[in-house]
Image (cartoon, rainbow, N blue to C red; front, top):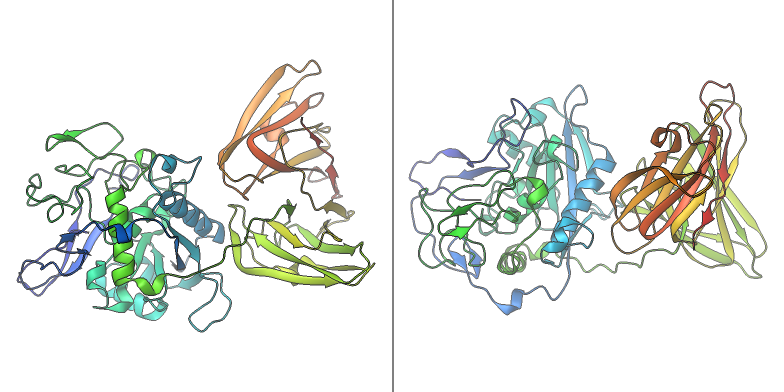
Length: 530
């Protein structure tokens, strides 16, 4: 963010000029530049990416993947406001990686791959297994009225800021996000390193205009050394060497002030960079970092934050899945079954996934079964994470894995769902009598790119009666759910067709309607399309 240089030894806030991102009465800017005042001086050029400018060097081109561990500190108040779910945190991480990796099937595919990837920390600073999320109830911290409070909760909560990107979510009412120190000032107060985010700007569906989750990408851009694209001087168009003035980048057009909405604008003799994450346009418009911004971010990472870089071996996605698993503590209990059909003892590795397609950190189990034998155990004994959605299976093909569901509170029978590896872009099944039962649908993207998923209702002649796109962009290994009766008023006497651009696995589960006195759940066998 733009740093103030002055003579007063004061703590200053500079609110960025920006349109209103919130709803009626909400005038928070995208970010707030928060900084410590310094003795007036011209910042001397010392490195290839500091407060004096940028030196573009091929050394920093995106040829190698850098991976950064993240810990998210969720701070909430006495009433529980701000206590974000694990799913919402995973949603934020998904958007961050889509933006930085220019993921196919998203708006970001129009941009450039930064070759920097983020993951929730799998171990804490002491080496203990971790999911990369902490929860703290503190009303004063949540309301975050002063910079001193930021330093206070940073000192109390931050994990080693040289090894982790710390993200703090609070109820800030003056911005959607900010950082305190630019990277070349790192270490001035280590507890203040990292990103602060307004809890309602995390993930999808939050603040109007910033409701696609790109605020985190904007702030992490600052964390990695990028200035605003509108970083003009004294309200004038930046002049002179574009590597030492403005935003220190030459392939971002200079412009006079922050843009809002998503309309083409002209200033300083150029088209404004309305698609750049470091502008203030609406989320629906944002889609790129430029090649020189990428060069500067990677320079920043290597120069100032190299301790963050991890060399992880990312396993290939499983090809066998338990497509749907009930969450711990819900209305159903789940039992895991494994049958070894071979003649020797064998083992499988089970990996728990959240609904957004991310493997849950630390949620992996290696299980063995003797030759010809079987094993069963409560799912809670294997995975207890509340974000559990589905399970990937790797290892011996001799072991068949299944899951059984049973109602926790009322009489019922156990339904069994077998592992599956049969993916298709088109599926069919027949719905039941909706006044007696409900049909639930789970769809898992087994492909390697984002995909829309559409449910069609067809009559006996194949004519389409109704269609609904239940998701526009299901990520690889992600899952979405739908209730058939909620998609079409009278689905009886129709065939339900599920279509996608990527191969998907589906599970159709039929259950008794609530209030019947019983609770039965069983699988309806879908028909795979050709």
